[in-house]
Length: 284
Image (cartoon, rainbow, N blue to C red; front, side):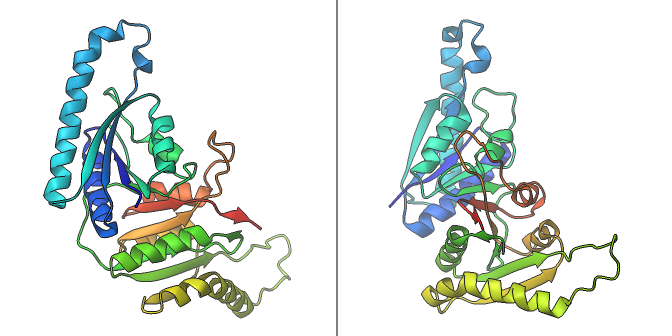
């Protein structure tokens, strides 16, 4: 069983991430791996050895607080604490590759050594090999729903699998959200669109994408949510009454040669619940 890894920097969002990760590890029956990364690069022009005691004290305080938060959230959970050095995005990407999930807060303090959140979480979401979960706030009252954003233009079985597995562990239902906007033909107003045919086509795509997952989890409630709306608006709206939103990513490489899709990136910025970004999604 792979560990659930959470990156911490002492900020409130990182402690929210610890609580979410502790819940996830407990549900999986996995270990919780709490990691603090010290980045010495900003101090390369000074004698960093003189800061060793300060770095060590900071790391100890951050990890101790994170451990207490996890213990309070899930007593008896197996966990290990790690203090690592390096570029946070590089260190955490390697850890994500060997983890069941990498969990991060939505933004960091950015003024302290080892701050790993904020822009780093955006770098990792969509480019790490494993799922990356971004958490903004402390876990709220569960509503029992996981949203999966479907993409008719891509083969996104991994994100769908993650959503169904997560919902199964939490006894939650699935909202399979397929949102699209009709093309605009302002330059050719005589063109008409059969909206019913478009809707039928979108429903057929969603049915195909979900078929094997419905078979694997026959007892899991699944609600097909087809909307004529911009995908970002639809997903953000759905996030208001969801425990988790799962989206796919088209990111290609570890160097970020292809950025995360604009929909996933914008949903990360505006969603009201935790977001799981799962790659890969392959464009047709």
